[in-house]
Image (cartoon, rainbow, N blue to C red; front, side, top):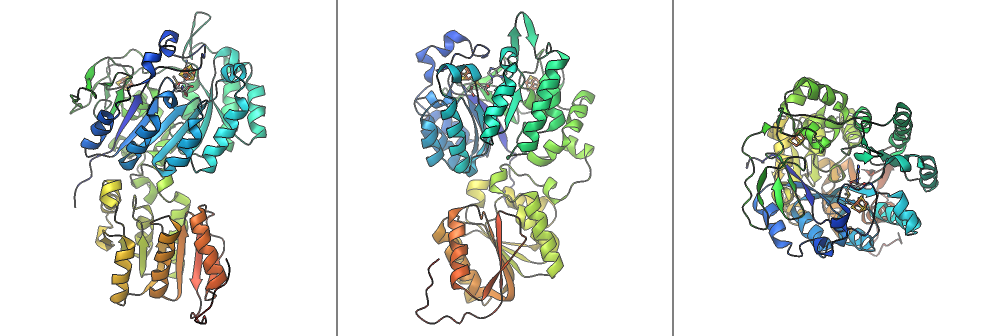
Amino acid sequence: MKTFNKTMSANMIINLFCNFRCPYCYVDLKKREDKKLIGNPNIQPIINFFNKSNKTWKIYISGGEPFLHPRFLSLCKKLTKRHFIGVNSNLSSPLIYKFADTINPRKVNSFECSFHYYENKRLNLTKEFIKKVKYLESRGFKTNVHVVMWPPVLKEIDNIYNKFKKQNIPIRPEGFRGKYNKKEYPENYTDKEVKIMNFFLKQYQKNNKNPGSMIDNKKYQKELLGSSLCFKEIICRAGKDHIAIDYRGNVKRCHSEDMILGNIFDDNVKILEKPLPCKSKKCNCYYEGIEFAMDSPKISKIRKLSENHFNDGFSIDNIIKKECPKFSIYEQLDILSKSTSISKEEGKFIYRFLKEKNIKKTIEIGLGYGCSSAYIISATKSKHLVIDPFQKENFGNIGLQNIKKIGLDNFLKFIENKSHNALPNLLKQNLKFDFAFIDGDHKFDGIFIDFYYIDLMLNQKGFVLFHDYWMSSTKTVVSWIKNNKKNYKEIKNTPKNMFLFQKVGVDDREWNHYEKF
Ligand SMILES: C[S@@+](CC[C@H](N)C(=O)[O-])C[C@H]1O[C@@H](n2cnc3c(N)ncnc32)[C@H](O)[C@@H]1O
Ligand code: SF4
Ligand code: SF4
């Protein structure tokens, strides 16, 4: 098996031009108004850079306003073929709708929507902002709305909070970084201001629909709202496992450090081979600093505070392993995008269900990060058959690597092929199963074909479980089964994004049977 190279992350600023005039923005106003800085339309070198590394990247894209880049959608489309992206935007562009309609939400780790109170008011865009957040959500994107707590905006937070609450949108206060009235922030927030921000942060955490993203940990955020971080002289993996790219294509280890590793457009980038000490007085890339700076009591402390976050969202390095020795199945796996994987709760459900029913003969379509396979095999300790044509191409073999990492690879029989080819072959071999998990092709016809063959191989009293029940395609297949296959009964009390059937009889439909569904 090919060894999977650890994932890399990149923070990429693709332009500086912006249509907003936020008074607190850390991009210089002159640059924001300079049309020449709208972004380089020649995106091919960017795509080439990420693709040629043979690694899966998490690429966080920001600006200026990235949606004003002349080829932004095309860039996202091309990057998401092999990598995952995150996007940061003020949502003023009408292209948001096109993005939502054309980009695969499963390849977008987070969509950070910045609500700039004064600019939205000045340009009368607040309603449109809310409409776009809702639209992105309806298309399956994980949105997070934040508001920069520039002191004059902080005074309006009640008002902003209520406006969004009416629309059922949680808002996250983001600590302002910069100078206001000659004072440096976030260090100079008063105790009262920090209290107010923490109050609204709590509301956000209670109501946030997309927990698990980088910015969700309670204590972690609390630390960041009222303080700056310094990791000077501490060894940091930024530059080796993470890079920052500026609007000219210069690659640095992070946006706080000046050392240049090359330029994407000149095709001469040299990623660091080993971690180096941090040289910055202030780690402005605080999320990166906390993840990548290593071996200091200070970082251990912050990491400890934020261990829920690390357990949930990121790959687990040795330091964190040392700090948190008790990992469940989920925490041991590298899962790069939660939306492409089953959740921990869903995994636990599968595990308990299989144990309770003492099921051993299992099959699954769609390996992904191997999360469901890990739970299935852990429960059955038996051979588990998994079909997936895109494990290498789209997942860099992470799923296989995960199963190996937790010592279950002896039980896994992996078929690297499309299910419409593999399933008929298995049928010819007269194989039978007691449990099937369908989570492969998510198009209606793909799911239907998978079920068709699974049905032919499922033992009486066997179970078939569908993932992603939120999708219309899955709902339609389920509806067809409910209305047409009377030998299947629904098993209730599953997690809400799953649908479970049990085969409870023979299929005795007449030759011309058809019920509307
Ligand atoms: C410079 S903006 C570029 C992306 C896009 N125009 C937007 O506003 O989301 C990147 C992020 O920085 C945040 N930001 C801007 N100025 C800030 C400041 N002084 N302190 C903290 N965050 C700031 C914005 O809210 C945004 O999330
Ligand atoms: S929208 Fe973003 S880039 Fe534009 S001024 Fe505001 S913070 Fe800066
Ligand atoms: S600690 Fe922060 S500022 Fe220093 S190199 Fe790492 S990411 Fe950059």
